[in-house]
Amino acid sequence: MTAGESGRGTKERTPVRTAIDPRRAAPHLAGGDRPTPLSRAWWHTPRLVRGLTALCLAALLATAALAATVLGGAREGIDSIGHRAAPQAVRAADLYFALSDMDAQAANLLLIGADPDYTALRRQTQDTYEQRRGQADLDLQRAAEAAVDDPAGQRAVQTVIGELGRYEALVARAQLLEDQAHAPAGKPSLQALDAYRQATDLLRAKLLPATDEVTAANAVTVDRSYATQRDDLAAGWSWLLVTGLLALAALGALQRTLTRRFRRRVNPALAATALLAAVASAAGLGLVSAAEHHLAVAKSNAYDSVIAMSRARAVAYDMNADESRYLTDPARAAAYEQSFFAKTQSIAGVEGATLATYNSELAGRGAGRFDGFLGTELRNITFPGEQDAAERVLRTFRAYQQDDRRIRELNAQGRLKEAVTLNTGTVPGQSNADFELLSTALGDVLAINQQALDRAIAAVDEDLGTGAAVTGGLALATALALTVLGVRPRLREYR
Image (cartoon, rainbow, N blue to C red; front, side, top):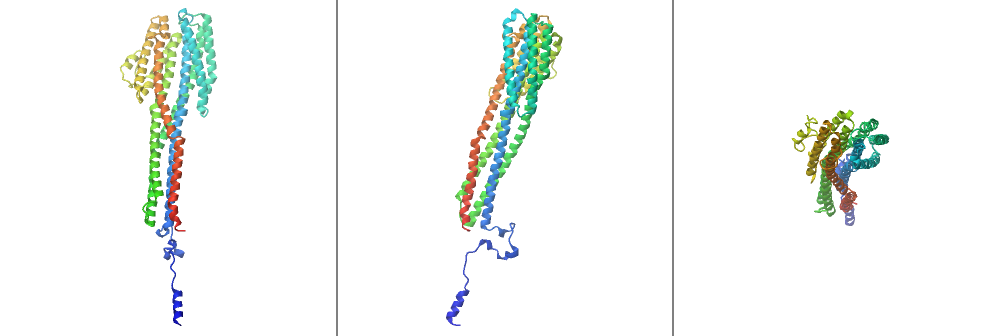
């Protein structure tokens, strides 16, 4: 063999150096000993980067989906309270109030009779009856519209619609018979009284219970919705924190892998993604906390007082009707007196009191140290001006109760016309005048809490409205895009 041949042979045997394929970095595992996902050798650089990228994307998507679910549920819960249950309950309470005052005015018309001393009052009473009649029709229409998705509410509304016409016909008959009889004050004709008894019995047995059923049903719905949403928000906040931290941890792991494997200190796109994820997670947690706060304000602070005061006003008008019924129908005076006292206790309950001792025992108790609707309100003072307004309710309620005792004393002394005058009078110090002050005070407390409820609902609508959804969607899309853009150039190096 010549030297040239030897040189050529040597040259042909020299191996050619090629780039090392990282996917073949473990030749001892070739063939039947291929690596598995549980082995370290399986996670070569491209696969590790892809896996961490997928984890980051999944964590970002999970955080966004969880935030949307939690905040969507919060908005639905508060929307249920503020836009459906509360308005429906208030309308039902307004209907109860209108029906009760209709009956009070009907009783007053029988009570004052044809006495010429009450001519102006009779005309005013008739006007008030017609006004309440129109209000009841409007409230009934609104209640029917609000109860479209509520079977129980629909049944209750249908009951009122079906019986209200009968009630109005009986009242009209009682007034006609009274006009024909020309009866003196406090002594209606037996025929007119019998027609009124049928009317008021119908009202008390069917109309008012059906109306109150709507309010009570809505209160139960709101309580259940509030308890569920409060628990969901607390759990949602915790889970949102966990998924947000997981997303940041995954982004940190991906950043660290790129730094170690590619000798680059910072990947700008991933750094921007991490910052965006941190800001978005903090914003999401803040929105959940704000929603939880607004939910508590809307339900516990405002709605509970709205319902308490709405029902208190409705019951107060029925109580005022009992006072007139007591004078109008001596045969049922004891029953109406007991009904008056039961409603008194439902507004401001004093355990162990009787009608004779009630005023003194109520006066001896501090604000909120009694039961009933007013007690509930005085233990739930939250908003500016609410304390003064609630205490004014208590003062006017006491004044009205004092008027009632004077009426009963005059009646017991046989001074019926004086009792009728005190009961129906609108001069300061007379019962109807003081009752009007009570009604105004109740309306003021109701307005304060209704405005607070509206503000809480508006705040949620603003925080969790379309703007928040669009911002969240853009943040998610940006984070996903930056994550992909951050790793794409590095993966290209392995193609």
